[in-house]
Length: 266
Image 1 (tube, rainbow, N blue to C red):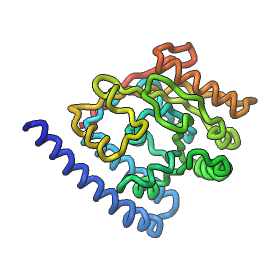
Image 2: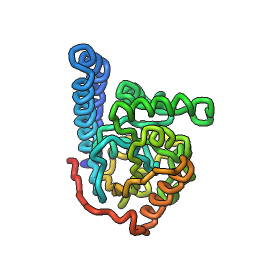
Image 3: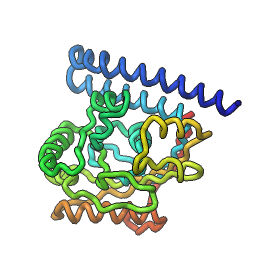
Image 4: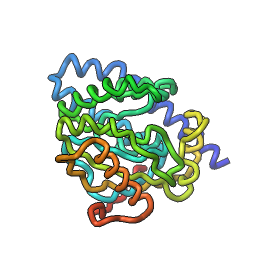
């Protein structure tokens, strides 16, 4: 009974959070665009997104341990991909625009919020879209916005890192932006339950996550990549190799984390 009451309480909080998100996305974001200068409007939107995502983390009872040094300037951040939770985890740590699969658009409320929040959507299997995606990422990086991408193009159970789509690195090379790999791993009970793969559906998976007492996740910010004189394939291979090493617990000298912090967001 106690577990059911706790779940019901969390569901109510999520409903209130999503309602507030709709108000922010549909009313406050457009108002900021009209009332504020572009630079100030962007800062205010980033603050609101960060606050909203932190509340999401709090309701989910996410316990995030970070290692390494997170970016302090505009960059392309690339990560392995396990679950929709990855977006919540990284989004509450870094103000950024995400590159995500277009399937998210069909998710209730979340799809609308992601679109209004500036997410770039990729349709899987559509090679003709590569140029448009690169141009959108290019524009964001030129506007001093951090972009977070999942070059695997799909989610895994977290034990493997699939080959990367090198095209996602092109915008960073063209703008000479910093490229920083990051490795995500869910631990404890969440290791088996957090992966969002196959035929999983968002709402039932969300309920499953809310049923957990806590969700433990480890985020490792690896060393930035020096892309000078390199092409997108070599940079892609280098970023993937660093993430693979981190997931396997093998830290080459160039990827040893420098700092460890724990974020108990509840």
